[in-house]
Length: 157
Image 1 (cartoon, rainbow, N blue to C red):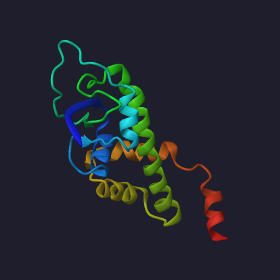
Image 2 (image 1 turned 135 degrees about the vertical axis):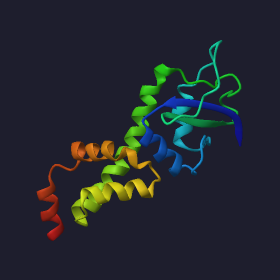
Image 3 (image 1 turned 90 degrees about the vertical axis):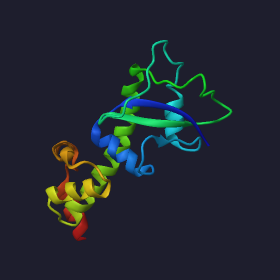
């Protein structure tokens, strides 16, 4: 059951689009006590500062709605300080990165798709704004599987 308290972090636009669409398709993302997002966010929750303002929707702000629970008082601890954005973003980026690179390697190396087509297909599958194409294209070329020749030989056996 949600509490109505919303916390937010700054993140990259494609990470925001990816998580919104993998967790229900609407913002704020409803966090439950049973998923890893709540465990991650609960470590960084603090009390609101004195001059806190409500979060404003923008391309690089990802919002989460906290659940009610007995372990953590979300009435008092419902703010994530900017110093915690980096570890949360690292975790979210890691989840995104694993899915993206796995998808790209599967389709580009094994199915012989063009990289451009595979990136656009990933964008379409996860409803990510296509203006993020260049960022994803660079991520793939930076982190793609380096032993492509070895993978191709293993596939032919």
